[in-house]
Amino acid sequence: MPWRRVRLRNAEVLARCDASGELISKEGRVEVRYKPNDGRAYFASAANLKPPGGAPKIEPDSFCGAGEAVKKPSKAKKKASSATPAPEKPEGDEILAYADGACSGNPGPAGVGAVAMWGDQMRELSEYIGEATNNIAELTGILRAVELAHELGRPLRLYTDSTYSIGVLTQGWKVKANKELVAKVRQALDAHPDTKLFHVRGHQGVRLNEHADELAVRAVQSRESTGWVGT
Image: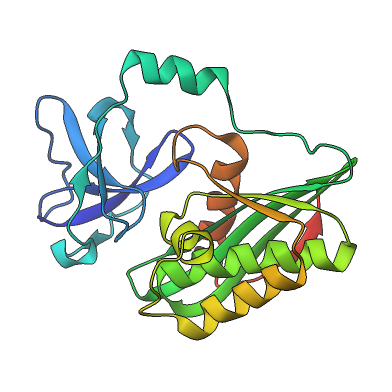
């Protein structure tokens, strides 16, 4: 079954459809993917999916890899999550940053998005990196945040929804691909040891993480880069 792009709240997602672009709904819910090949399949209410306008662009079934259905967290887990929300303000002289990557196809046109806050400053980055994989985009986003913190000489607290990046950078995962880029990010972290990396669940309403994702998607769609700009 093919896919088409639709809006789900403030995010663009890929939704299951038929050859004409009509969404395929089972018991009122449609299979959606936030990214083509991140291995996670979500199911959204058909009423919450809005077409972006114009003729639908249909992607083949192979555009998205196999995905495992994401189970809804229990009420107890939701309550615990809401009690400890992801931070939105930096502490002391640190930089608080969120970084993300996006890719249309995997590999395909890829972009990086990042948000950085310190003191009363806030900057954001939207960077097109050409043909790449989603993992390369995620790692590049982390690299850009570390480079900024090193340039400014401030401690860095960085959040990413990339389990892969956390694994290869902090948990000793064996690096089978992207060896040069992983080595480059590790070198940047060694040069700026006052960096703390944290994992945040993607597409769970974490405002700054969602914004970083939007910046990455914007870069893919526009094929343009802004560099770090103040907001």
